[in-house]
Image 1: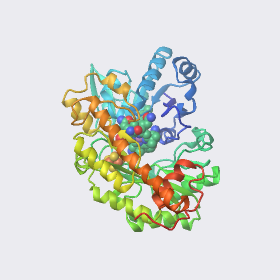
Image 2 (image 1 turned 30 degrees about the vertical axis):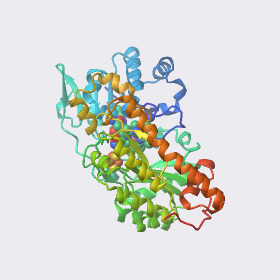
Image 3 (image 1 turned 180 degrees about the vertical axis):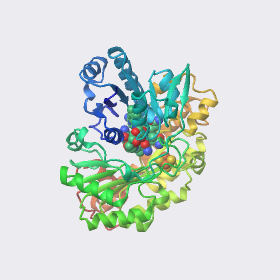
Image 4 (image 1 turned 90 degrees about the horizontal axis):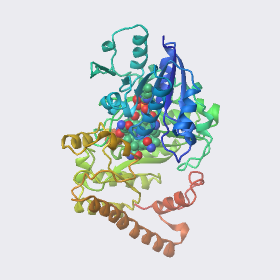
Length: 479
Ligand code: B12
Ligand code: SF4
């Protein structure tokens, strides 16, 4: 009889402070609601012992009837290590895999990694249903949203319909997490000591070819405003949180809701700063003015490229002109912003590189470019498989990381060397003129009379911890 469930989250990154992830607290809450005993082992809090010996000792110290392991595809090696250790130490215990890794490669998870069951997609209904079925010897084929092996073949049951109203989900099981460990650390971007990640919705309406949607297409759903306010108040009261990071993929897309949320934040005297992410086509003057007034101090944008051809290949459904407009609006209202960029997309060539250079110079946009990385489950990955370019899946998954490194050449450049050369060329051609411009402006205008964009950029680099606490003194605007 399965009663005790041990859920494990592999570490996300080794060099950063503990990162709070909602995946397991949400899953655990739905399991507890069904009467199971749950323990969460978040390896983000045990980064120094992620080796065979350390993990063996840790796992052997736990009591459980079944184990569930989460993780993104980038945690492939750690997940495999965890499974191997568990198999050796507890040969009779069953292992369920879920989350980004298992949902994107269910067959590989069962056949190669040797998981007993995969829960794909949302998991909050499928996982308790799976365990009930195991406890009662019920047929697994009737449990939606899972995969398992039968007679050497993978059986994938029909998808579990999503919980449409997120408020119906139980509150994340914060009591199973050592919350203070995620809060009292320095955040590189915000500089605040007391900051917390918070989620007001999941999913996205986009269809980008390099993006994997764990819960499938059409999975965009939101928590209600009263629920978000309640959650923010809880964190402020209990942990004295001063800065929130909204982790929704698409925070600004539902404009009227954002405006109402901001209004409610002010009404409830939620005096915190916050960060959110947005597509460029969600930016307009009204929304920027509103979020700024409600405490937003930085907007993360997914710009990705300055070439229309590349944006079209990504199925980004955005025009370069829209991006420029969004940047101008943000700068006009003195709203700091990020803007991730990608290099190496299918179709990338000298011309698209030059278009991106022109874009970045014109918009004074200088960031590190990510390598376009074909994560499994995405359209660009599936195309590579069709073209026979992924010879050994396991070897490929083991190499997947944060997209800071070159992995596979998707571009029109004939060789890997050429593709790598043009990335360096791109970064150099953007950086050097921008730094020269900065030097000339400092020389001619003085440090305190720079336009907003440059001033903002310098402060972020030089004094990250002071970044959000100071008022911008310059009245001059870039656009
Ligand atoms: C916040 C976020 C981040 C955060 C933190 C990641 C994290 N661990 O939470 C940051 C910014 C650090 C990040 C980084 C990256 N991310 Co990210 N990220 C997200 C985002 C937007 C939300 C994740 C989240 O918290 N969701 C909410 C929770 C509740 O949902 P969930 O995690 O899916 O969990 C549910 C189910 O999956 C299931 N479940 C989860 N675990 C388990 C375990 C078991 C046993 C079971 C049964 C069920 C189960 O139940 C949960 C409750 O419903 C997602 C997009 C998305 N919508 O999921 C992308 C996403 C997870 N990220 C992704 C990627 C590719 C990355 C990067 C590689 C990007 C990059 N190029 O650098 C890096 C990887 C970093 C690293 N070193 O590994 C991909 C994952 C693809 C994959 N196949 O794994 C996603 C899906 C984005 C995308 N659309 O492609 N990311
Ligand atoms: S990349 Fe961003 S906009 Fe595109 S589908 Fe993914 S989350 Fe949505």
